[in-house]
Image 1 (spheres, rainbow over the protein chains, first blue to last red):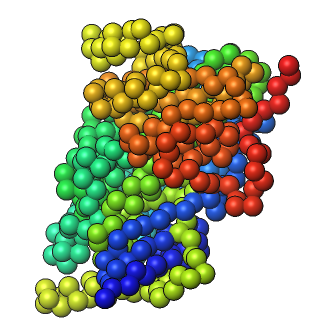
Image 2 (image 1 turned 180 degrees about the horizontal axis):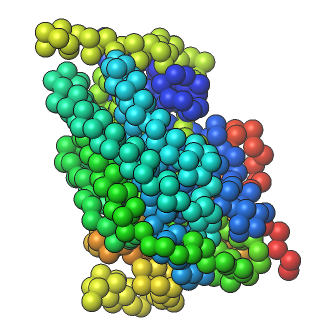
Image 3 (image 1 turned 180 degrees about the vertical axis):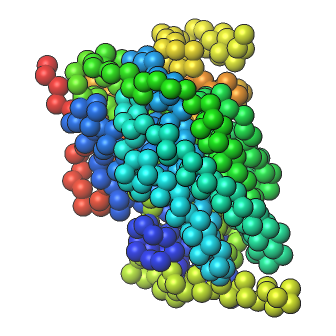
Length: 395
Length: 145
């Protein structure tokens, strides 16, 4: 006879770095349903944006997320520039693109490290984060800040990339290129990682369409969508690069997409540094007319969508933010069901969820629900599975 | 020439109240609330548009909702605009039975703006605290009459 057991993960637990709450319904080892509850990080930023003037909102939305901190202001300035039909100086577009791609690299390395930790590959974790560090140094060199760079501004950027910054930037990219080659070998060709991640947490192409997922989550399920290609902003239409698409839809495919994407990002940054023209970096915008605009950015986690409406005053009358995790986290309901508990940790982490963006995931603990595991137990279980696999591979 | 835009315009012809192209890739289509489900079904399944999100707004004329659909082959966004005039009885068909991608954003609009989504399978709070008072909607405005 089987008993339905509920495993509450969250709202505060080590599986993720942010508050969220997953309720896993399990039958034996198998996950039969997942309830996702969010709301722990709701800060009412859309409402707050209505009381700030257009320039202040850029800084406000930069605080939505600490990891992809430039994605939201980038999408916001794109929306306002669409609203007011603003022509941005070319040099500023190049600088925006470079910043956005540096951010993608550091965000993907962060995820790769965490994913390594969850499955018990702590060396991957430490190496990934080691190579993430010089990227943050580049941000500090350009903007003075490691995480909230405050580069975006309606009509341009706030800081220039100086000539003397280009050499150290290129040097960091050289080192990173070698490191990525290593990660390709270490992660993608490792038999244990392959048997640990392949066939786990599958989201089929059909499901990806139904849930309208975006970013690496969609591209790992065979959907060739990328805002940078489909609706180019910045200078993505002026440099050559490839959209990385995998068909399998499992955690391994999501890992491959992110690793290969970082190589494309390096190529984009190099081309930008080479082609970047001299000139103004700001269009000196004064007033925002009545109207509405939509701005989109391919954040590291997928399409970031901003809608802004102006009634002619100096404040937006409505500002809608839709972060990529809002679409991706909801699809965990599908990806985790049918898998085992030991795979749940890595499956739920595979969409690279960002709760402060989505603001929003929980699993509720009812008084009658029996707690049999916590987040640490789940990670331990996940790491034990990898150890067993290593033994079967004689490693 | 972009065929999807033309096809959609042709197929919706009698249902369009207003068709506005803000720029080449941003199209706003005003429709009646009762046609929303049928048109969304057509955009999502027949034309393969992706559901990006929806944004509700309190205006002096009523609550306006924009349903944003993206066509990723051309980078266009088709935004369906509906207006719910009776603020005391805000009701519209839920799109969640058509595609699950709409579930969360409808729950969000339900709690922040007080719109009832008819046929939504799981209409409960998404973001606000359980203790949040009933009938208080954070994104509503006080409009001068």
